Image (tube, rainbow, N blue to C red; front, side):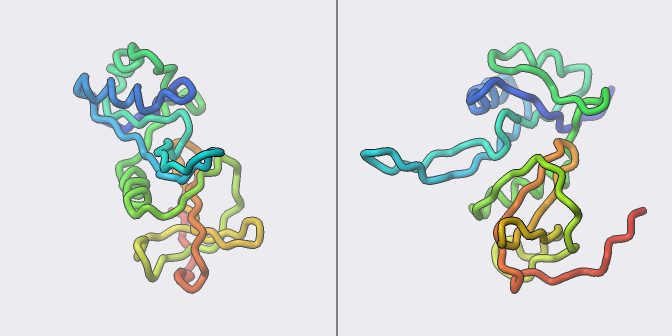
Length: 171
């Protein structure tokens, strides 16, 4: 029996929540990171939950069951990179969950970002998390790379909450 891994499903636009709900109802282990933001309409303000990564739902399953998951309306395909199904490590998913649960404002960026300084957060809700610090538009961002989906999570954090760590040695 093959092992369970977190695979990355791509869904049709704005159907992430429906697809995740249907998969859960069928007994699949699913994770859809949602962030709350305040939207302004002409007559009112409303808090809305939107997916952190547009079009992505994480499904924990075996490779031979991917086809079964794709039978749900709104499911498009499982993400591939260089012929391999994209998977996300448990520790990366735990990182995403921790960031989302704190409610800090987070952006995602799928562009290639030059390596920043390796840092550790020394205060606040993300204390002890490690990542990189980069500068973007005159602001400092604490960045965590999610290699399985070529996405970066960016959190605007003042440098006073970051401690520079010695260079990471690539093994």
